[in-house]
Image 1 (cartoon, helix red, strand yellow):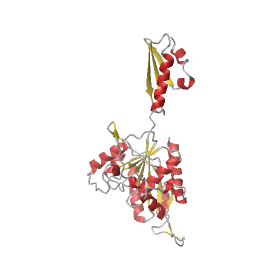
Image 2 (cartoon, rainbow, N blue to C red):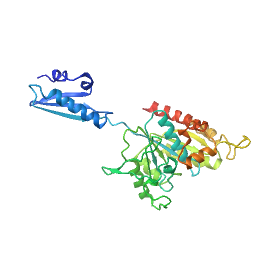
Image 3 (spheres, one colour):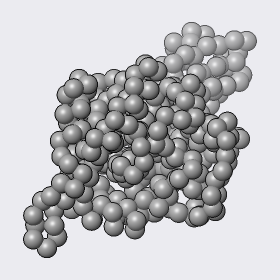
Length: 320
């Protein structure tokens, strides 16, 4: 019996999935490409192949093997040289904005000592489960699964770990069951410490986004963070200026308590892309505290995040 003739018995939709069909000692062995198929679809196609081929006079047994191409999970680090520049807020909103653009995005809150993503994404108190010794990310109502130390310890409890323990925690958060996610945003702690080094050694990111306020001190620290990525061979996708301009809710006058344009100037000086500005706006703070990130809304305050996500999405697409 010619395997080609046997394959011809299958409907076109099934035959297109069969990457090979062989006959050994009257046993038909079909290898099926199950990439992108759910468990129910896999079961159905396996049963259909057996139902069609088993009655053939030259076949005593039918075996079906499923294979699937694992989609590469692209890590994007979001870092800063110092704390208090709005890095976690930017990361959460970028994740949501990318999801709105059709990307499947996961988020790791790698700020081991000061996790804030459970609050921003509104799933504080949820606990991840484990499967095959790996964590299952916690879902959020914004379509972004997330893992954070904030999901593993009691809220408000201080975490006092030495470097190796923090590195091991990061490994568990990243090496989890991320399902069909294609992009994993990693919200790094500020600075250039053990967590950053562990990530660069074990999970080298595809690229990094650096966020800073316009003030000189923050820019100095941001440049230091950029140097760390550069030394590790991780391309800096671009710089984001946060807390750029404050519009008075009473008179509408715009002031710049942290300065303006410093990050864009630094990007030009370092020959790095400038990705955009996020204003200092009360709605961003209120939304973050309430588990309602502005990027999920149709409010005008979502636009800066959507614009930056568009540039990040283009970068990811160009590297795919």
